[in-house]
Amino acid sequence: MTKEELLEQAKQLAENPDSADAVVQARVLRKKWGRVKEEEESLYDKELQESFNAYLDVISAKESEAFGTIEDRKRAIIDKAKEVLNQTNFKKASEAMNDLMEQWKVSGRINKEKDDELWNEFKEVRNTFFDNRNEYYQKLQESYEHNKEVKKELIEKAKEANTLDNFKEIANRMDALMEEWKKTGRAGKEDDDLWKQFSAERKTFFNNRNAYYSGLKETFAKKTTAKQEIIEKAKKNLAISSFSDEEFEEMKDLRRQWKEIGNAGRENENTLWDAFNKVMTTYFDNAKYYRN
Image 1 (cartoon, helix red, strand yellow):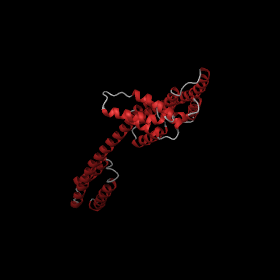
Image 2 (cartoon, helix red, strand yellow; image 1 turned 180 degrees about the horizontal axis):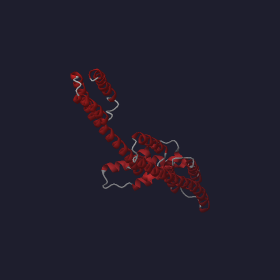
Image 3 (cartoon, rainbow, N blue to C red; image 1 turned 135 degrees about the vertical axis):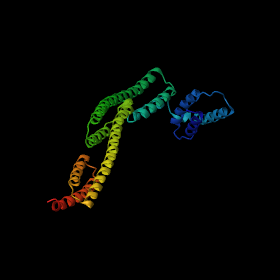
Image 4 (cartoon, rainbow, N blue to C red; image 1 turned 120 degrees about the vertical axis):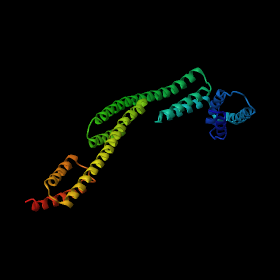
């Protein structure tokens, strides 16, 4: 914390109508100010010091009206500590409890018996808080361990999915695994590393699928070209229609070649087949008359 920030807090305390709280907080600020170290003391630092002291002097002037007794100060701190027990954000609650400890240190002394009595009461509240905090973090750690094992299992299932040949099945599994991952809570410090492993398996799937369909698209393009060439040969023979043995056998061979090429893809296969089948049907229907 910088001196400028401490100065601003001192200013706010000087304007604070709750003089009791301001007096205790001012003592804490004075200790914090002493902890801020500067490499060299400049004129600006002296001006800050003077302004800081001026605000604290304003607060000190209210000290007589701040609390009726030191006991009142300490009981006020105890009450605030009890309020901290209701907070669910343990990081902020710990900061608040530590701040109350600082206030306690500068709250003054009464006598040993009374001071011990009040300290034991304050300590009991603090112990309850720390017990609650420890229990919370223990359960949180147990949750992390459980989630870590769940995510490790999901990673293994993703690896197993990538060994399949059916990309539709792999996609369905990956989607289901992703939903399970989203439902699973954090796994602590290892969470980022686990996500990288899981994400890598998903990336492997997407890369493999993209490569497969890219290759399939290229294969379909080649098959489309090959079938278009067959259609042109068939059309050429149909145009000539000599119905010679050589031509007749060539047309039969074109059918064989068509089957050997295989499917040219959903986008083109039906159109290609309709064109090829029309030519072949016409040719062989005509051949019945010329070759009988």
